[in-house]
Length: 69
Image 1 (cartoon, one colour):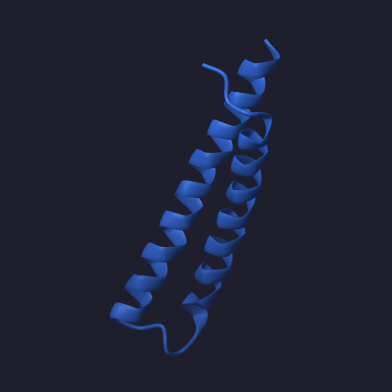
Image 2 (cartoon, rainbow, N blue to C red):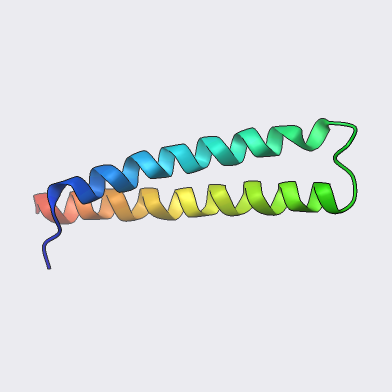
């Protein structure tokens, strides 16, 4: 199955943005107001963003490598 060329670029760019977003969100854990549910929400949002970013990066690289071989 062949995907258009723009798909892997889109995956890699979105992966980078998701990882940066997750890192940004996790940076708020040191704030005094990050307690209880707010802290849990920050951890979930940041963690899920980073995990999805890593999955998208792996998929994008895999598509790039599969396309070249």
